[in-house]
Length: 533
Ligand code: NOJ
Ligand code: NOJ
Image (cartoon, rainbow, N blue to C red; front, side):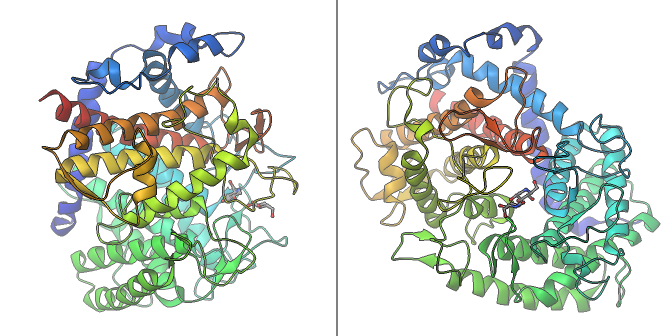
């Protein structure tokens, strides 16, 4: 048995989270009888209109003023449904993944047009991070089994020779595998260097969680399999950290699998992996590795800080040397969500909020469905829209024609704002600056936010945060409108008609929705506390 004292500190967040979520659940019992709210043949235009936010400035707001009832109930129900559908895509017990190697997360059960019946390293790791967070809250033994099967399988995949290479020759950057773990040998955009970082982030999160849930210690052999403090290493986390620390300055394909370049998303998740990896190495007395990860982490941080912001464009750019694309991309928001640090592009940073505002403004015009009202909330100012991957996108979910809004990109916009609300409430102020002015102007009743510091004594402080919450919710409301009655989410929804497009039951669509809702729980609780005192 070994103790992991030094990794304890960052886990405090998990506890806090668990407490908040469970107290929230108690306050919101039994949702099963809400099903009728959604069984409306015409997708409830009337219902949605009646749900429209009351935009008169509330003097003493209460829960009811904050969220229209129908929406709140739908969000609660869809959180549960999404979780159920997500688990159906994980082997061996998931009904859509029968026969796949235990621990496999299929991207989608769709086997043709498009064939997504594979395990992508990225989708799997992002999903597993959600499973680990759920395990931290519930302690559910079945989830633990899934996580350990996933970890085992990743160890096998790392050692599977594939078109990107072998264990120490680049193979860790391979983006996808067959569901039985066999290498995928067709032509593809490879390597994709975010995969090892996302995988290691998920597994380090698991080590920390275990340290909490099993404070008496962790099985030593199992820990060695994850991180062995040796060089050369034969352990899963350290192999990924070695890959990242030696290859972060090389180009590769982006998370959308299309562009060979250096990418903001990839660099951000690699950076966070090195930060977390350094912490783990220190804890496990691997000081040589800790120094090495630290040295590379500093270089990578400097590279990120100096390379991606464009003052001229007023937003971050997703990559460096791809001149035929603007660089505006929802990958910027995903990067911040998955890997933002307090001092490195967190969700509430000026640059991320600025990028969000530019992306949303673009997509509001770009996708015809976004101009329809209703079903969306009638008033323009706080009306969410469907959000796609990036403006120049042509992937329609099966082939190349015209790009559409994606469920996971739309959830991500909400999620950035929920995290921002929690942070601003925690620090007791926020600053409106030249950089984030457009974002705040969107929330301002007359579209003219005024620069300056807003502290909690200022009435506008609350009003902005309440409106930000409503605005964030209205992106979830877009998802509500395009979800099936049963709560199913594919990859995209058609930009003209709103009907679902691309791979059905996309695991990542479900995961991004549940993550957004979990952060919403925290933001809402903090906001209600702040406005009722
Ligand atoms: C499939 C990839 O997964 C997707 O990201 C890409 O846009 C299309 N192929 C078109 O290249
Ligand atoms: C296409 C997306 O662009 C990519 O990010 C994802 O990994 C695969 N589909 C599988 O969902």
